[in-house]
Amino acid sequence: MQRSLILLKPDCVQRRLIGEVLSRFEAKGLQIVGLKMLQVTPELSKQHYAEHVEKPFYQSLEDFITAAPVVAIALEGLEAITVIRDMLGATNGLKAAPGTLRGDFSSSRQMNLVHASDSPESAERELGLYFRPEEFCEYSMNL
Ligand code: CMP
Image (cartoon, rainbow, N blue to C red):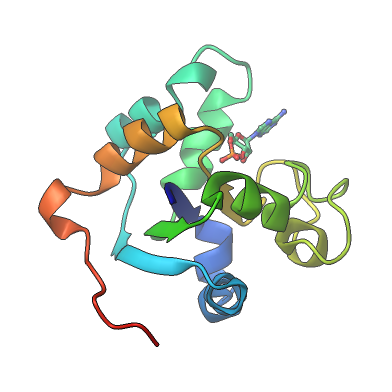
C-alpha cells in the first residue's frame, strides 16, 4: 500500500471540477484517507515547491497556487503514486494524453488541475505539510 498527497489546484476548484476529479479516483478504487479544503499561503507554497523556488516560473506558480482554495487529499492504494501520476498525465495539459485528467481538462502547463506526489519520499514530505498524523482516517469494513 502507498499513500500520495493530491492537491486539487485553484483552477480545479474554481472550475467546479472537484467532484469530477474525485469520482475518477474513487472509480479507480483509491481510498480517501484524508481530505481538507484550505488556502495555500506563500510560506506553504515555498515549502511545497521547495525544488522550484529558484526557477524562473516560481513566482507565477506561487501567485496561482495561493489565488483560490485548494483541496488536499491523502489517497491510498496499491502502487498509488504511479497509478495516480498515470491518471494525471503529462505536466503540460497541452501534451497530456486524452483520457488523463490533464489531457481531458487542462490546456496549460501551470494550471494543470491536480498535483500528485512523484515518489514515496515526496509523498511522505508533502503529506506532512498538509496533514497531522491524527488526521488520517482508517477503514475497518470490507465492502
Ligand atoms: P506540479 O505537478 O504541481 O509541480 C510543479 C508545478 O509547477 C507544476 O505542476 C505546474 O503547475 C508548474 N510548472 C511546471 N513547469 C512550469 C513552467 N515551465 N511554467 C510554469 N509553471 C510550471
